[in-house]
Amino acid sequence: MPQIKKQIVEDFLNDLASGSPAPGGGSVAALAGAHSAALVSMVCRLTIDKKKYKDVEKEMKEVLKKSEKLRERFLILAEEDKSAFLNVIREKYSAKSLKKAAAVPAETTKLANEVIKLAKIAKQKGNKNAITDAKIAVDLAQVAKKGAILNVEANL
Amino acid sequence: MPQIKKQIVEDFLNDLASGSPAPGGGSVAALAGAHSAALVSMVCRLTIDKKKYKDVEKEMKEVLKKSEKLRERFLILAEEDKSAFLNVIREKYSAKSLKKAAAVPAETTKLANEVIKLAKIAKQKGNKNAITDAKIAVDLAQVAKKGAILNVEANL
Image (cartoon, rainbow over all chains, first blue to last red; front, side):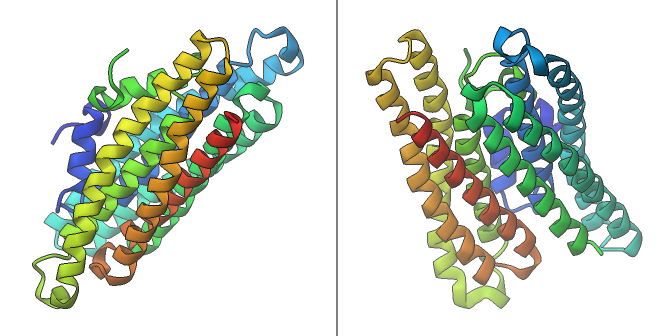
């Protein structure tokens, strides 16, 4: 199976919609985190180097550095969730495989919390023309968190 | 610019994170709808042809048909949102271009409502092993709806 981040959008959605349980909601939660982080980065970039937002430029640069790192990590987590769940199936739901599969959404939860914080800063201090994007980033990160928590619980 | 549905996942996220305001939150809202619809399709497929779920098989087949159509349409809306917003920039925020740009999230809102209904059926009646996926589908469709409404308002 190809890596999610290297897949064509349409092909990934076909895999998701298929009758295989992986990729499933866990990968989607991590991808929601990646989309949220990308929106935060966009808002930062639309704020940096603008006279009107000179006062928040330093903070926006720091937010951008963090959101870019999180975006990359979320893509890896989307992949790891798929692999871990395929392993659960191969191992016939063994305790060991389930424990491993719970570790991925646990990290997604943690990172989603970080993105929520960044998206709220972007919403509050970023370019007002992009406030809708920042609001969507907040909501999406919250779905990433909620979805990841559901997946941790499902694997316990 | 390449079509979103034909882009590599990673490349689309790079475009999203860039300093160009399009693609932005509007496309992401439509993509959230596409991911939600794909999860609904997966839950349907994991339910159909299972003895235990014989009673809901007919309904699940109908849900599947609808979710597959919605998924396709959401991908087109993600693209149309990007094009409409690039046109708004080209046309320097003319009333005509803004009106056109508001029509896309208006349709996303409508379709998100449909996916919410389907995801709730999948959650209630689908394979219990995939209930987490159905729950994430509901939440994601709600973000698609909320994000699309924000975009309609922003373009009014």
